[in-house]
Structures are given as structure tokens and as C-alpha cells.
Image (cartoon, rainbow, N blue to C red; front, side):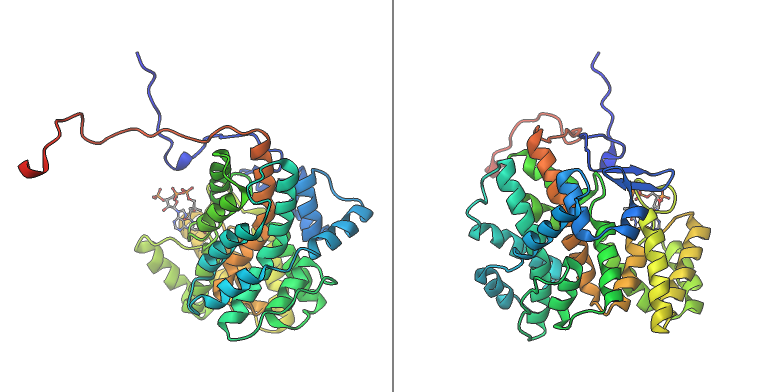
Length: 376
Ligand code: COA
């Protein structure tokens, strides 16, 4: 007798591969990159350190980190053709769609685009990590009728992005808050966009195609798109005293409250803990705690009514907002951090590849005779 085929809708609980990058304990609310707790990395490391860790397995020595920063910064400029493309896009284009298209175009000016060797893929990973930030910032300036700002190799990845966005060097606090945000978003085990990147690579397609798939997947509101939806919700609610009623109505009409719930965490997402603290500190320092107060009320209401905890997208929303970043850039910012995790996962995938090709249970009509067009 044939074994019963079990359908795991949404691939819930299905283990598709091994990974040596990121471990999540969803019950304990723990997240580690290569064995290091996210709280420790958020407190002590920088995005560049985390990128090195993800790509090279160990934390860098001071000399390695210094050389890596220089190497990464040297890759920031984007080809003229990509700038031309960004100039030609309609001003109201979705920035994630713009990023997806620009990354796809990047491949056309990379002589190594179709070289799937580990050495070439590492070089391309560096270029992608450095350039996605430049693309996001350039797109934003061009749609505002401003010229892109040349990257500054003296600045960190985080500070340089804020500089390219505004044309002004950020203060140390803003740069550090943004750096921690990048650290927190850098990798997250087999999330949907990482999975789609791996699926594309598993056909032995190239790294740019895989990242283009990942960006398209991250764009959705159940994944990376949730952070901008969170901010729209906070602005729509407008004041803390309206939050309770708003959430009650939303849940009563079976709407999802963005920034809550998670496939893996059954307790608080540890990244949300760090982001809540940073959002509070930023709000207090800026003397404007409105967004934070609304967020807190939403959080306690969703917790009370649905037993759901905030995920990474909830407090990152008000944090970015307080840094003065436009709402529709929140998800591209997720991408400019997650590119580290995507490329590190792709190196693993190419190193031990098997075509990812699941099955599905057919529920359509049984075999039947073809009816000629004239007889229908
Ligand atoms: N708001 C309201 N209800 C939610 C919810 C949310 N944010 N997240 C989950 N639920 C409810 C679902 O309605 C469902 O209830 P039901 O069993 O009564 O139908 C139950 O919890 C399980 O949800 P399900 O969609 O099956 O879980 P999942 O593991 O497939 O989905 C998410 C996980 C992240 C997609 C889901 O929690 C969600 O949609 N969150 C909001 C979007 C978001 O913040 N995404 C970013 C994730 S980092």
C-alpha cells in the first residue's frame, strides 16, 4: 500500500536543508548567528563584522575587519547603466520593485555573473552587499529630483547609507541605531526570501537571479513588507487612546495586525526586544514619544486579545520613522541588510546543492477524453 502523502501547507515544519549560519529557538526566543547570540551581536558588533561572520564562519580579527571594511567600501559605486535605469523609472514606482529591477540589471554588467564557482560567488556577494545600499539611496534621491550622492569610503556601511540618502553625515547616535538595525536583520534561517533564493540557486541559476527572486519574495506584506504596513497602521491610529479600539475592530474583522506573529517564534522575537529598547531611547532623546506610546498600546492589546508577540517588523517601523526615513524605504532597508544572509545561504547552497523540487497533491479532474474545439 502506498504511504499516505502528508501535505505541509506553507511547508510548515518541513526541514529542507542543513545550515551552519543561523539558529532559532522559537520557544526560548533565542536567535544566534554562527553560535553568537543576537543580543551580544547587537550590543558589541557592527554590520560589517556580522557580514564577515556570516560569510567566513568566524568573527574577524581587528586586521581582518579593517581590511574588509575597506574592501566593501571600495565596491559601493554602481554602474552608470543602473543609474540610468533608476533615472528612467516612474517617480511613483515601488522602491522594492525598483530594487528588484536594478539588481537584475547589475548582473548584465558583471563579467562574472554566470560563474558559479565559490570564489566568483564570494566576489559577487561583496559587490551585492555594497551596491544594494547605493541603489536604494540613489533611487530615493532621483525620485525626489535630486542627484545621487557619491558613497563616502570613510564611512561605515550604515553611516554611508544614511549619508547617501540625505547628503548629510548622520550623527553618531543615528548611525549606531541604524547599524544595529542592520545587524538584527542580517540573517534569519529558512525565511521565505532566503528559501526562494535557495530554490533559484538550486537549479544552478546564478546569484543575481537568486537575489532577484529573494527581493521579490521579501516585498510581500507577510514578510519584509510588514514593516512599512506597521508604520501606516501607527499613523492611521494617530494617538495612543485610539489604539485599543482600532485593534479590537481590526481583529473583529479578521484583519491581520502587521508586525505580530511568527512562524517560528512562539514567544517574543529577540530582535523585537532590542528594537523596542532603541525605539524608546530614540523617542525619549527626540522628546517625542507619540509613536512609541501608540506602539506600546498596540502591543499590549494584540497580546491580550490574540496572545501574539511583536516580530522584528513592529518596532523597526517606528525606529526608522524616527530616523527620518520614508515609509516605503523600510522594506528596501530590510533587503540591504538581509543581502548578507541571502548571499551566505547561497554559498552554502552552491557548495552542497540538490535541486529543490517539492511535490504537490493533484486534486483536479481525473483522466478524461479531449473534446475538440468545434464540439465544445
Ligand atoms: N494578526 C492577527 N492574527 C494573526 C496574526 C496577526 N499578525 N498572525 C497570526 N495570526 C493568527 C492567524 O489568523 C491564525 O489564526 P486562525 O488559526 O484562527 O486562523 C493563526 O494566528 C496562525 O496564523 P498563520 O497565518 O497560519 O501563521 P503562519 O505561521 O503561517 O504565519 C505570519 C506567520 C508571520 C505570516 C503571520 O503571523 C502574519 O501574517 N503576521 C503579520 C505579518 C508580519 O508581521 N509579517 C512579518 C513576519 S517577520
